[in-house]
Image 1 (cartoon, rainbow, N blue to C red):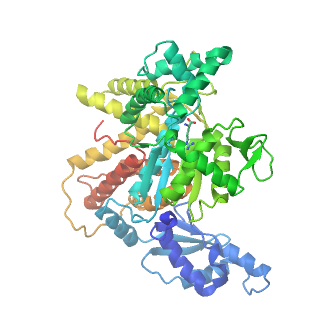
Image 2: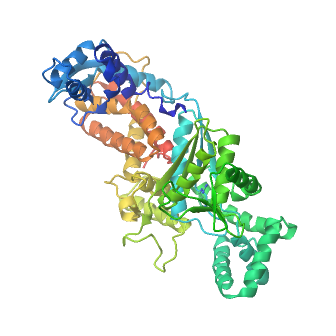
Image 3: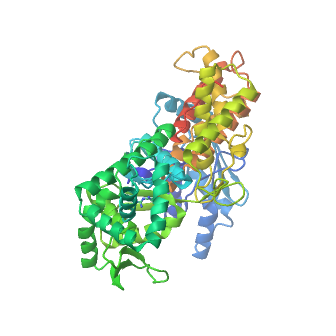
Length: 575
Ligand code: ARG
């Protein structure tokens, strides 16, 4: 896939100059070339440590006249012919090469960025399919699904923004033996199939209890499953009504979160399963063990993943095998991504391994599991309500919005009542999303309204206030005369902000590679702090260097808007 192309990123640009010098002088060591951001901006913007690696490799091979890595660094620096990108290239410490970008280069790049809202790395070729959200019918969506929904949506936004063809799939749990007991229970108790999900969930719980205690009910339920699986008209009708009721409720959450996704639930793959399992048996990539069809890990260290039960029934893994085959061979995408909690890692490892063994990934399809940690309550345990129930998403969003409204009222604002309610809705949703996204997705995170809504913390609240600040400046600003000649920096805060602004492409490339939306969060948070520093130090309207500063504000606002929208958050114009 094209997602790894980075030559147009900032790091890619610098790497190119560096590589051509290394190619000339140390052609065997091209792969040592690496670039990182300078931790200390007074040394430069970027840093390379290749000279040390080249020196020790040469010495190991016993073929060097160099006395130390600094001498190697000097030869590399000497070979860099690019004179416009850098203001200075210096050697520091044991042999680090530090690059300081020239103001001319920074401003040119900034102006290029200003011409289009697309990143320079857009126009990527390739396609990606993201399986995310994926709640289960007749059950409430829980915080795990919320994480999957938010993370999956952010990843899709990034792919789409960079020009990749992106398929967003909702692998809803809408099929399986649980529907037998549900339909049976509802028929027995005359529960209407278009009940609210909370009622369905209650039925589900009680049906399960009866199933475990009452043998008659158990055998009736099994009959009901058989009817459903043979597409009996009555059973199908009830099933469909149950699904519709859940679907409508899921949709209210998606609407509130502004998520678009295509539903393609487990039932979609049901008819494909027998042939897919036959193919896997014929190819010898799944094995029969005690009557069940199994996928073992390489060293048989753990219990196998079962993909056909010993009674011949299909399960979660059977469906995922049919689904992955369909996605790789019919959808023909380059990259297939699954966003679920980390607890399903073993399941997906087995599915991917089997898909590869069956040859379904032969066109170079990449399969990836984007796992995430659990959401903890402030007591350090899995997030639950006081009565021990799973927390409903609706009440979570309601509370976030309510608290935002209180916050705004207490802080004092000029917003009208209507603006206030819109602002608190937007703030509430973006706070919940950002609180989730800014963590490393693999670590469990603690859900805390107080922390999430802290104006001084790394929160959506802080970001929204920063955006509203720059938007307010621009509303009051005179229009800039274009083309912009004579732009320049007078102050270190201006330059730092500008350098950060031109790093967006690099961040997008890294996000797509590592599937980590937290990178966009870090970028946006740093952008806001840099902007706030700049604004504290530099008078914009009516100040010296007004045109350059206004230009920086414009680029800042536009870049913030991009980052907000990639994270699925709506930026507020005033607060
Ligand atoms: N419905 C599943 C759950 O709630 C998640 C499905 C994830 N996607 C998949 N293709 N298995 O845990």
